[in-house]
Length: 249
Image (tube, rainbow, N blue to C red; front, side):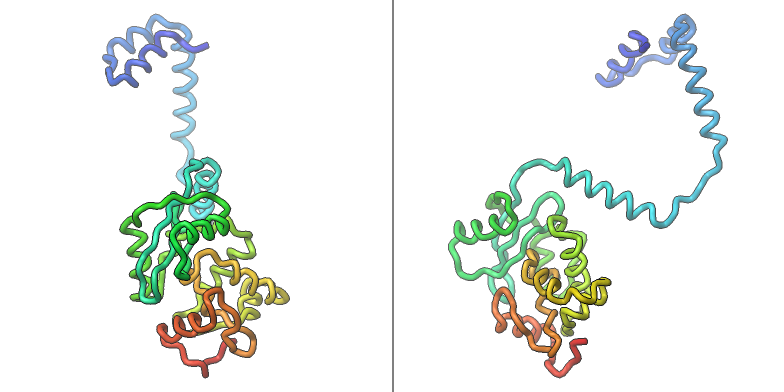
């Protein structure tokens, strides 16, 4: 049973009124319920202080962070993602982002804003609202074309399957100016027979460029298909310094 006087003290603290120590001590001396609770909590505090300090295992922090991200996704607001266009060396990019990072990057095909937004909404299966790109979004674009790298912690691909995420994250490990085959990615993620499925994952990549599916080719080294055309794929690779005589593994 909670003491009503103690509840009143908590209310005062929440309201910014700091109770005087003597008031709390005076209450403790006359309230048997609070005396019993104090003894109980005092014993718990003593036992906790007697416990040895244990260093957390190294795997614990990533698990905690993953759990926090999962909880944030579960309870995040239903507000639509933001949508804008950002200039780049290969033309305007269509970019969507939300609380957890950039959710879509695509190369503008010359469509009007409403038509382009409708395409992205269908791809993400959620509504978008027009907004001005924050500095970190513009910086992500600038950094990619300056270094061909991107901070993947700023990218949210949580809506994809585990297989698709694994395939895209492996593609992100391909160095700029180099290519690897669909089969290489399949082997690297422990699914050696899934080269065709890797190709599908690349085709459904919602964050083109930043997860560089343009660096993935077929077994013969041919550039194969690309959502924005083989010419654009070749252009991006040339910009990165790729020469076609390199081994695609």
